[in-house]
Each structure stands twice: as C-alpha cells, then as structure tokens.
Length: 443
Ligand code: SAH
Ligand code: SF4
Ligand code: F3S
Image (cartoon, rainbow, N blue to C red; front, side, top):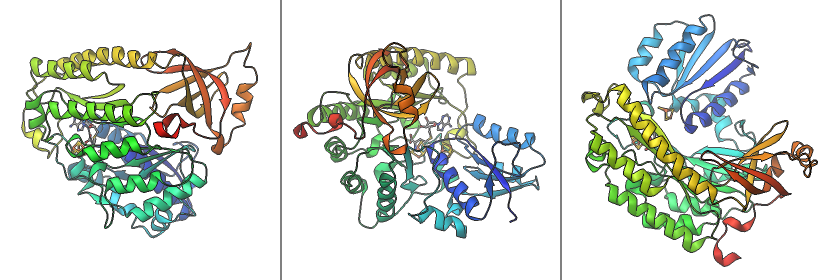
C-alpha cells in the first residue's frame, strides 16, 4: 500500500475500542499516517458493532457519507450485512480474527516493546479472550465473534508489566465472559492473582462477568486482591425468571441477588470501609413477550440492589439469533416508558450511593484537563469534576496541566454529588494509589 492517511470510526463496546488500537498500530507499521479528521482521510476504517440494529444502521450511514474513500469495515458484522456491504466495490473487510494475522499487526499486537498505540494514557484495555460460547437468545456476539478463545496468560502478563512500567494506572481486562478464561495453565482466578502480584501501583478491573459463572472463589479472590478495584459490572438483563429463561441466561433472580450479597459481604470483610463496592449492570427492556408484571420484577430488582449504574438497552431483534424467531411484540413506546421508569429508579439509587462520598477523600485518575476544571474518575467508576476555586486553589490547575502520564492521580475531597457524578477539590498530588483500596490488615 502506498502511504495513505487513515481515520478510524469505532462503534460498540470496549473490545472494539481495544481492537481499534490494534488496527491503528497495524496500519502505522505499514506506513500509513493518521488523519486529523475523517474528511482528510483517504482510508476510512469503520469498526462496526451489530449488537442492535441502530448500531449497524450507523455503519451504512457513514458509508453513504463518504462514497469516494477507500473503506475497510472491521469488527462485528453479520454475514447478511457483509454481503450487502460487499456490493460496494470501495469496501473491503477485516474480521476480528484477522487483525493478528496481518503480518505487521502480528508484530504490533504481540510485541511488548512497541505495543499497540493506546489512546488513553492512563487506562489500558487489554483483551484476554475473544468470542463467546453462551448464545444468549437475543445476542449476536457468538455469531460475529465466533467461539471463545483465550490469549496465553504469559503474553497478557508481559503486556500488563510493560504498561505499568510506562505509568498506566488502570488495567481493564476484557472478554465477553471473563469468568470462563482459561489457557493451558491458568484459569481466571490464577490470571487475576498473577496480575495482582505484579509490582506497581494500579487499579485492576475486568469486564464482563456472567452471573452463571461467578464462583464463590472468584468473589473471595476479588476481595482479597488489593489492586482489584471495588467495582463490578454484572449484567442481569432481566429481573424475571421466565424472561431470564427465554434469554437463555442460565441463572435465576435469587442466584443473582445472592451473588450481590456475597460480593458486598466479601468487600466489607476484606477491604477498608470506603469506598464500598460499586455495582453496575446491563438490562434489556421489552424482550419478546415481556409483560408489565415481568417488567415490574426488573424494576423491583433495581430498587432492591441499588445499582450505581445501569446500561439500558431496548430489545432489538438480531437476524439469526434464537429470539429473532419470537415476535418483537412490546411496542416502541412501551419500551421507552419502561426505560424511563428504570432510569428514574437508577437516578435515586445512584444519587443515594454518590452522596456517601461527600466529605470523603478519594483517589481520582485524571483524564481530561479543561480550562477551569479537571475531569477524572474514581476506582468505582464515578466521574469526578474537580473545580477551580479562584480564591484558594489558584495554583492547582496549572499544576494539573503539567502532569504527565505517570502522575495523573490526585487525592480529591468530594464536596458535591449528583446521580451521574461527583464534584471535588484537589487535596494533594499523589504518585501512589493510596491504600484506601487495600486489605484491612495492611493498615
Ligand atoms: N457479554 C456481555 C455483553 C455483550 S453485549 C454480557 O454477557 O453481558 C452488551 C449488552 O448489549 C448486553 O449486555 C445487552 O444488555 C445488550 N444487548 C445485546 N443484544 C441485544 C439486543 N438484541 N437488543 C438489545 N440489547 C442487546
Ligand atoms: Fe452475548 Fe450472552 Fe455472550 Fe454476553 S454472554 S456476549 S450477552 S451471548
Ligand atoms: Fe462489542 Fe458490539 Fe461486537 S457490543 S463485541 S462491538 S457486537
């Protein structure tokens, strides 16, 4: 390929974000240059998501916007869409398994010295496995990403080590169902323990756990590994047993509630009091046949658990999945109404949880410096806005602006809370993650 300017548009989950970094690295190894914006690019890479129809519609939209560019569609695509897109001669395809097969990409993705260029300088998203074997009845991922495949732990650990050395403060391990990670020698517990034991200061977290595979041992390990952030994303999808069955999720609401109880108890036992374990989830509203009563069960669960965050999705039938054979019979308006009800519950529970931060001092990882404030997040994934206070804190913004990758942590006193975030005042610079996350016995 002659040298071209490329631009990548990424849709979908963090897995795609991580893959886009690999794609960028592969392109740069073959001499392509990043474009500043999409207009300037000769080559447009669209990293697609097919999880809902709306996501794939956007891909078609982008292609129509740029008829003159060479386009590569990467990421999650159904054969049906691939065939339709392939009629356009400007389009070629990379499917997720191929990023590694391209000779330069193989070097880029597996080499430790070079490493894929990462967009966020604090947070490393590290895929530990690809694909999924679960076939939840609504979900397209097993069709677009194929079966589960785990990366060797030795490679993952090498990558983590090198990133920590470079000053990354947060490591997020990615997979559709990380609980079933397995290489020749290690399961997920062993992988977590090995990463936790690496020297250095960093937060460790992982996405996504499946409630059917979350063992008591994993809960105990999470709470005992002091670098693991007090945060868990545990998608429930529905609070009704019949719907869960139709979704092919293989757990009951009681099982889910018990997991949350055990998680909270384990963190109470092994960690210092603050911050408490934060819990987020995914919920689909309007799954085929979901009655008002069944939806009420989901609303009740949300009230009971008091989630810190809920990622809602209105059910969207995906061709080829088992649920697509059922009538999509909850009207759009009703799906919206149910989303609103859940959102109102979330607003209350998240606000209640966030208010507990007021007056406390927490570690904040700074991601963005603006003119009059800095934006960061806690290990529990709360967004924190650090205000400039012209009277007493004149010096701190310039100081923050001078920060580099390796000192992007700050100690912040929380002075305000809404449902969606916190406000705080900078207390001190800190190079180290303070021992607030650490085991009780360490203090
Ligand atoms: N592996 C993860 C999530 C993968 S997809 C898990 O098991 O939870 C991310 C989220 O998209 C899902 O959790 C679900 O809430 C939502 N989703 C998946 N398929 C969907 C569909 N057909 N319609 C609406 N939402 C969907
Ligand atoms: Fe989809 Fe279920 Fe696999 Fe998650 S576990 S990716 S929802 S099939
Ligand atoms: Fe992620 Fe969408 Fe693929 S959610 S795994 S990018 S279908």
